[in-house]
Image 1 (cartoon, rainbow, N blue to C red):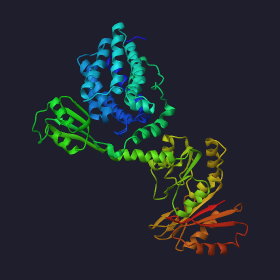
Image 2: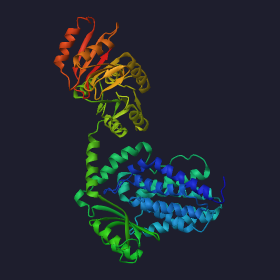
Image 3: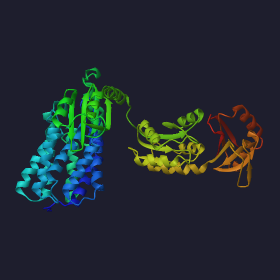
Image 4: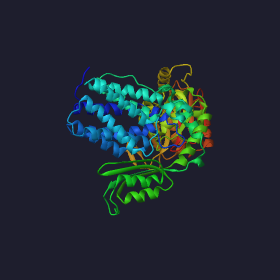
Length: 556
């Protein structure tokens, strides 16, 4: 396959696919971030930075590659986060400067763009370190330049760049001792390789297999994250961190009332170098962006204001981040192996929750009527369940949609049994079989919902009329399968009448869950009186302590 000119539309598509590939593997890149001082997650920072650039390109109406490259560079600069994101932004800022005059690119111009990107990125870093994303970018660009001498096919040049990046990435542990110590490749270099592979995939139109650095695979990502990163972080004490605040500012040059000095890049960078380490200063004609680890973040901001207005400010306390890493390591060590099944139920009331736990529920989310948990709440419960596969019981129709959304994005296989009431949820648990598959359990537990009739007694909050029933404020309403069947001033009368509506000739068991606003003693007295009319029925009274509903009723 040949491509002798890179057109604007092809460049747009190339950037988009590169962004998608990085987004797909951002968590894996995070897992390789082994440096002892936490400075954000490399994969997240690179992903958010490149996504910002890709969005600007996708929204651009430019018809020339040079103009689109400028859009990419501007978007990356505006969205750059952390060291890795800033370096990534500089790689493509240099690329854009090299190609800005061209409507389309030939193979040599394309390769020169990557080379100039490396030159700009190295200049942006005060003290460049080999074995990082810089090394991968440099050797990839060199491979591209060499190929461009041999061919005018842009696809062949991009393939050489990808291969050069792969070889360089595998060598990073030999250049950086901390990588060799924990047995992984550089996280930023791996992220850059994902971007470049996306570029090549777009140009060829063929799906490419994912390349991992030596010793890395998707299956090992979780191990790297929980063991390698934590071990590296544990190798230093929190008190050993010299410069504790990761500080980022973005300054609009020459803007605002605080401007006193004319901006000079070298003067600006030299001054900030005296305030800390890990310094990165990048700038174009309008904006300068700073990343530095310092003990005096306020001084960084004050200095920036001498040259313009502050557009963005971000300060993270890395000592606190480091302590979090150590605590997470302890928590990970304590975490038990995943069990086969986890069952999550949404329920309110201490007694009701205890009943669910006795029936085998792993995690209870406190909620229900008037207290609907969010999708995030349910996802957190899935994580807490620590299971290979999960079953969710919403027990309320207003919670079912959030549960379905959580199941769709769950990191482990998850299904929702569409229980609309507490009795339905409890009935479904009796059909659970630990030896069955997730799909079979879903089917049998869903089928079990049909074998129970649900009822509630609650209080009316206003005068109204529904289905011919006159309801007065503070009346007790009897509800069967979601439909109001009666309204009366007497609570126990409402209970007796509602049970009469629910019980039929095949009824064997009636379960009554007593709410926090009802009395177990009064309920037992009523049931004793009813027993003569229902001699063949077993009544089970439980103190559910649920809010909102004075009684929850189950008839089987």
